[in-house]
Image 1 (cartoon, helix red, strand yellow):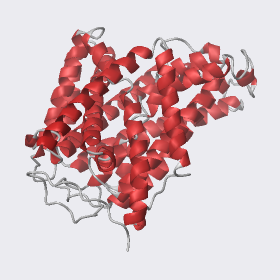
Image 2 (image 1 turned 45 degrees about the vertical axis):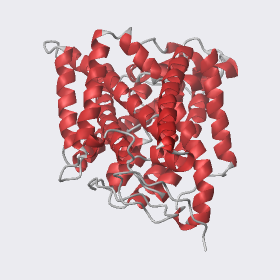
Image 3 (image 1 turned 90 degrees about the vertical axis):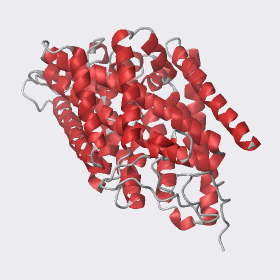
Length: 475
């Protein structure tokens, strides 16, 4: 007979408690509707954003061709985190995903803390995405003020998220398809250019990888600095495990989505960087210009800048849509566990948590206004306060997986349809890598403010969680 997990404490007004030792969550009132193709493309497209298309230039500047190694290291860490998260989500699907897992593994304080931190991260990042997309649209149609574009985008995606969840899935499916198509087209054109198979190009071989100071022009220090510059670009994969709870077959859906996403994304990221540093010398990249635009211009693709503007525009809107969805489901899950106002539990006839959507978009819109009015003061402090939150979330995912894996193996080993590689050693290696990134941020002048502000925000949330725990024990 299998060992049983200790039952979770019953809370006033909660759904009926599960049988003692059950690994099942209370039945979700959210409506289904997400198909496997939606989740697969959400996993692929959710992480392919402006950070890759535009921000990768910063990593190339500090690491040179060694940026390929930086992406391999950062990608390997992200793959491990997603494998851990996939293991827990396949065994125990829940709309709160890692927040629910943290609560089961470590206690209510952990679920409360990671859930609210992640929600705050998403609604702040919404402002960056909405403002970035509005700036591009304003460049195309200068007669329409930037704030008008922001309002249009927020209204459109609020409407999409208030409707049936399949509408969100369709939006993300086509957005992600366009982004994936753009990456594949870039890889094909770049490979042809490297071998001199495009008109007006000559074979370049490995000269750009070994010239201009060699493959590691700034040594391994440059590679490590590159990891610091690119690791946060892998954020966004977590949403697929949140969305899986609203699919027709959550266990199968999350398993397949995680398996396919991690490998393909690593291929897209590392492949793109390899093409960029192989086609042109790394010193040819210009500050403030997307490396993709520089390469496309060099190989003679007409209107490369406008093409990439369109791709980045779609990437920003896709991320805005996905983050609004993820934020609404996370705060709904918190409300289910009495960690957020109970008014957010209202669900439409189609199973959409509309109040949770409106609460998330309302705070997101406040963030947008702060970004438009005070980008270098108030909003900068908010952005810094979530700068390292992703790593805190990843660390709690790893610790939760260490605790829950043994319990699942004892209570219901058949639930482990997706297993973390090399458990427990690889989980510990991933945790050590996260600690190393924290250490690097502390010693880096540009990253230190983000770490300190994020640590402050985390400490504040933990303090609130601690006070709630003390009050609960006195009752």
